[in-house]
Length: 599
Image (cartoon, rainbow, N blue to C red):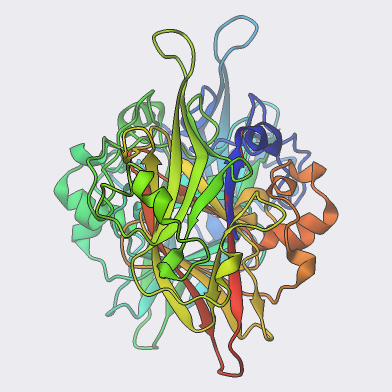
């Protein structure tokens, strides 16, 4: 089952943040702070409010992680209002004068800037190789450094400190910490690893720029929990000279930085309303040949970095174009919107209003409709196969602020055609879901797969329609059967982003996600048996704020959903649907339900 949001869905979903959007709060750190409702910024630095950390300007008067030196500095501890009064261990690394929490639009009209410090303390045993490497990187102070011995791990708490009040500082915007130089040694037998929970988002070089990453990502159990592991041997060639070398547009980035430094980077984004985070650092040794140390380098953007990075889109931001579909359309530069429906411009699809005059995927029926094909200016003139499913009157491409002042709306249709052999169980289930037409349906037989092309069509011009905004297609009811032996699977490339219930709401997902080779390539596989209890009644049941969502929908329907976001400047996309059968006990059919948001 697949669908998309209509214009009505977008207005009611709660997925597009207002000035101060509210999401369910992430679990607090220990000791628990009092946190306000969370504000969601998909790219932390890109709003009027922002958190910045400047490691160059910071000093480290205390550098004594695990009480192992090199700078205990008892006088500083006794004079520091936070360390002398709180219950945290005094054996950590203190970055003084590092941070600014900037909120625009105060009553006076000037930005409200709150300075804060950063204190890092270990909560489990810490075993270093060389403690004198900890703190600020020697000679180039734009990184923080944690040195660790091989075959050890430690849980660290990063605490933001209000140095005046002597208490934890609660952030007023989301923020990101970057780890660079995530590499291995000893023929990839000694690996650097990070585990973290309560993430708002993560971005490797793949998500940031479409550049292949050397960092492996695994989803863990728990809200926003992931593990990041180095997967390529490093050396001096991939050591970053300066953090700012990475914070430039890709087209301005030095070739050596792009090829050697960027693939070993990962950006971890955290929600506002928190006063820090916890993570686990580990040096995983796959053999016992030697004891070595590894350095974890971390940094963040300064205000100057934000202005030069090119990571915050302007009115018409430009990214490297994704590979075109076949046949290749002429596509303009891509526009990045992290949540496709939330800008002034948007793509909406309304499966309820759409009709399916042609429903003949793979030339297997049930509605060939030759007269419609001959009368349709696109099908009768293009070189695509005429054996697909045509959704007429489904879409609107809306751009605000035309010369007349009114929104410019371009209507488009959707045509789905198979590019490899398609084998169904019941073709009469294809098209619009019977009785509840707010989903599209593709029915498939077990142990089969097919490559499908989704094409947006300009019905007036009789040609492909090139989207002017990013957009998302939702697949719901991604479940299994036969004791999880019959699984639904989707493979897709050139994604702008994906979101399961975990990324959307922090709700555990029943959809397994695997990164594949290629730009924005992922595989999504069902991992829980379904039944009528997890079948969505209406797509709009999911497109509401979490606090308004029916409990049965939240617990049974939402975990089987995945949203696939695509860039603007394209006229469709390809994906592979498969029903993977782990045994050969029976031949069954599975329905892929898809939808999108209405306004």
